[in-house]
Image (cartoon, rainbow, N blue to C red; front, top):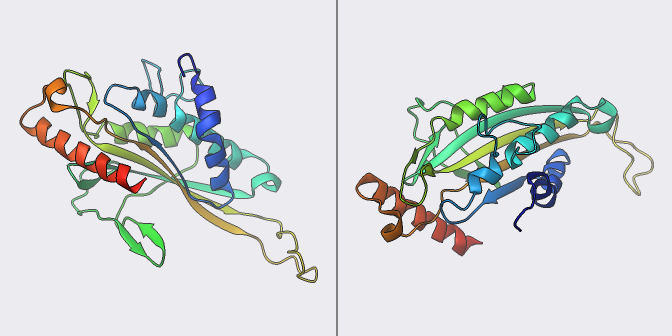
Length: 233
């Protein structure tokens, strides 16, 4: 609603999903809407100097989610165990899946589903130890993202961007004995999950946006993929 703070949006939309990833559940947050409606503002942030900044009132969902994960990583091992994080970034541009961390990667990327798991072979995955290091990877990756100006948005995203955080958690202490197990505490738990934060390109009417040539082809691909996503949802 109008006047809602970035912190309130994060608490309502994403905080529970981030916490679930620490418990071994995969989670995703997607920003969907018309071009210029504020998707990147909500996902990335509102700071004019550095929209990837964390710890400011204007910080968006992505920096806040990462800050929450790194706070868990730095907490006492008795709270969350040992948490390891790594990050990948991809864009879907005109139906092509491209690596944003290493945009020079010549390998064609594809999405593969095997044994119930969805993976992207050959996607660059960077281990990160600090929040600043992680944000720097995302900041540099985002510079490779396809953007251009239209009549509706001076900095229109021409691709869907997905920021993928791989979360691994190892509990040092044995897990509690399962009910009915006869008191056997079992071994230390190992949990693995992914947090996917998606800034979708905006849908737009060609007549209003005034796009032509390559930008027109981009718009066709964007609207087609968003229509497919809507059908899935």
